[in-house]
Length: 351
Image (cartoon, rainbow, N blue to C red; front, top):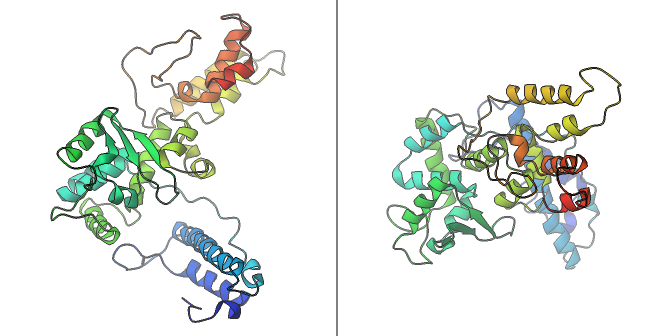
């Protein structure tokens, strides 16, 4: 570090600004410790995001030292400003074909880790710390202990993942690691990074694919399948929905669009664009344009409750949008399809 031998009281704003610029312009290290030879604009944006994150951690440590009386003044780091107006870098996630290639290119011991990340969206550290007792065999839910965000959570598992985790946990004590090396013992982060470099090369994937990409893949497919961003936030273990909105909202085929187009009032007396039928045609065209996005379809009939709302979605993304559900219920009440006593406020409170 540029000022590792400098005392806290000797730190200057100029030193901190020089260090921040150095971090932002230094190439990222990936697994083997070798930098990217030709950084792209996205790489540079990521480095600035990384520099801001490291500065936040450093300032938190310096502020703690100041509160504990280890520093006489905090003005030096209070004057330092993060990089501003950073655009959000495109999230890299794997297609289904890429994910299968990565699994096939990995040795069996590493395959288990890759599948665990794809099925749960867990961070590498969360998978390493997971024990066999994390699987509730009665409910087939997986407990993820507090990690980076200090939030514990229970995860519902896809059907394919239930058998996978049952097989991993079979015959193991509750405190035995869920994911172990073939030689025994827990994985280490450095080992995961090294295996990922070899696996992605064998699978023909680029350097932008890292182990954390599997977490992005999990979240991206949930959003594209119609899951609400709030649900994705809970499943990922984030404390704030803003990060989920920034990263994944553009992948949602119906993010606020259906509600606005279908329920916005008419201001023109005539014209196809002003009629409800015209708006429905517009929505149908929009959904057809999004048909190329991966979607998960449920073949079985969709159960309907007493208010006429679907409890499960059947491939129509708008059925998974809580705002759209509340708006449809309100529209049904206005038309007299069920008792008028159900006000919009009550309906919105039930989603």
